Amino acid sequence: MSTIRSTGIAIPPYTYDQKTSRLHVERWLGDRAHHFRRVLDAFESGLVETRSSVLPIEEIFLPRTFREKNDLYAKGALELGERAVRACLDRAGLEPGDIDYFITSSCTGFMIPGVDALLAHRMRMKPSLGRLPISQHGCAGGAVALRQAHEHLAAHPGHRVLVLAVEIPTVTLQLDDLSPENLISTSLFGDGAAAAVLTSGGRGGEPAIVATESCMFPESEDLMGWELRDSGLKILLSKRVPSEIKAHAPGAIIGFLARQGVGIEEIGHYLLHPGGRKIIDGFEASFSLTRNELGSTRSVLRKHGNLSSATVLFVLDEHLRAGHGKRGDLGLLVAFGPGFGCESLLLHWGPRAARRERPATEAPVEAAL
Image (cartoon, rainbow, N blue to C red; front, side, top):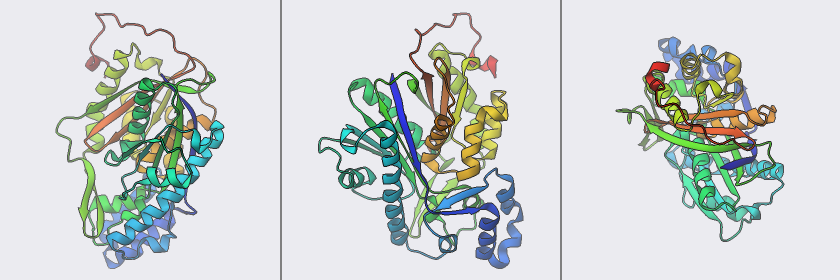
């Protein structure tokens, strides 16, 4: 079992609402804007209200080379990453030198050495620091990083593990790409960083990760990802994503919980990566949830948009800052990403009672959907 000791977030200085975003997208499209009215309506219908960027909104639509975009990514990732890490460590009462293992997730740019190494030098972390950069899990990266932290602590129970997810998706805009996915991304994604510290033990009131599981959906490798172009990273985002999640995620999640001796009815806290409105609505429908039960997810999407791998850590931070969760509560953290699949983590507030076994005659997972 690994305890989430603290979290911290950082957002860039430029924040803009959806009306302003749409106006700038329409200026970019010019005379072509009237061809994309249905896509542009996503600015009003997608639940997002504001997002933040490392750039003033006027500069997001300037032409840039891949190198120029990547330089902006590197600068923004380091600045936001350091702020999120310092906020997280301060809340945990730790110094950078106290960290034994550093896991980073980021998919909106590329550099070697990575964010992990550069921040380790900048913040004077210990020379023996272990590092694990994660770059190709996309929106699931934050959940994958938590899973890796949990597995590391199982092998090294005395360690302190730092997780950081940082993304700068606004620099990936393709000015010559009028595909629906590129246009939809202008209404959905924002920049930000989020961090978490995990240890083997805690003070009793923090959530602990007690189990994790990954599940890849069949014939889904083309649903989401990046295509590398001379002009940078072009987003690949299939319109099948919501329907594939609805078809496969409930069975995967209920099966995961059943293997831990837990029924879906026992979950009191849902921390879902808010990929977009259809994913949230579909998740609520699949598990018969009220809007309040995904309150932290909806709040993050409303205030920050989709921050790719950092989003689920923003949701975790929002949930904990609001004081949700009391001793004995169970929670479920879920994120989806390229591959395509689902990352599920079972959380428990305080020491967990012994795992109970399900009766052998219990109905199969499909019967519960």
